[in-house]
Length: 487
Ligand SMILES: [Zn+2]
Image (cartoon, rainbow, N blue to C red; front, side):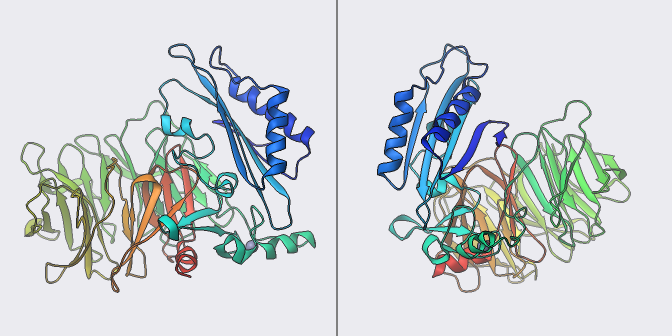
């Protein structure tokens, strides 16, 4: 039985009515634990009603959220979703959840997946492997099997948590592909604010605001976490150095850690809490945004040059080094993009947007070959722009849904192929733009936790790591998903 930290969560395959009744009882116990009011009341009539619905319909969804709790008390809920695979077996997911007073209502409105709109049951039952591609009527449900097979449910004969070929192999007693890589990874703490791959692609590190760095060996799935000493401040960021050291900022402290032992190799203290940083690709410079934005020499722990002062507008919002580490681009609150030469520490060009509507820069990314800069701003139209860095000219613009702007870091990145740009959008949706061919972005969204805060590509470009709400990190086989979405 799998009991998650946030409630009861179990998938049954081809259960009997008795199995289902027992599972529902356990789910209700977990959901009601430590609640005095706002309890879920499960009657045997309800259980047989759910069983009858499951028999009548090959897929469906049932949910009950308990009655009103007293002020500042917990509330519980129960949800059941089912779906039938190609050999007619019912797959049933049962969740029982207790919410804390004041926790987010979107999650409460849909216990299985925190979306307000209804989702197909297969999405609800095996969220780790299911993606939605496209929009509106053209929307497709895609499944990604850990063996690498990706496509629509029919095309790959989706069996719930594996493709038809893998199912057949397991029926014959053969070993299956390693499943640790595609299954989401939950670390301690709250929202994941930074994810980063080691230069050799062997390790994935992530951190939240309330926990130190956690490092996962992608070959073995083995995970190690920083042992928190005392309270952490609500500002943190993470990056790997070219030599494999891990840079972690926590409050004012900038530490260089060994990613295997967390032994400290170096570090320094900034003059104020560091909200986010950018590491130059050669590993020598660190642009730190705290109260001010300064560029530091990582080896000596001294300020190399100041970029902007808190007291002098416009404020910087986002920043990125060029691949050769010679330039730093800074996206400003007034919508401009300003350049600095890192060798001299002097300001260079200022790029201005050709718009009159007020907008702020929110995220910048530079292609690995140093040709393109992408800028994402808060404007209602043409809010994603592709610039030719040498010419300082806008090549293309896209209008993306920016209706909800969350505070997030690194919601945009170029894939190592240099032509795919991914942008994190509201509701956990990702837009993938081909910067060479142009055209409309391809949209993909993944269950189960839609609040995305940060993303990073693996060095070989095979995986997109996505850091989400509730300390969840998920690896997307994004290329196979894009290919399947295009079919
Ligand atoms: Zn498979």
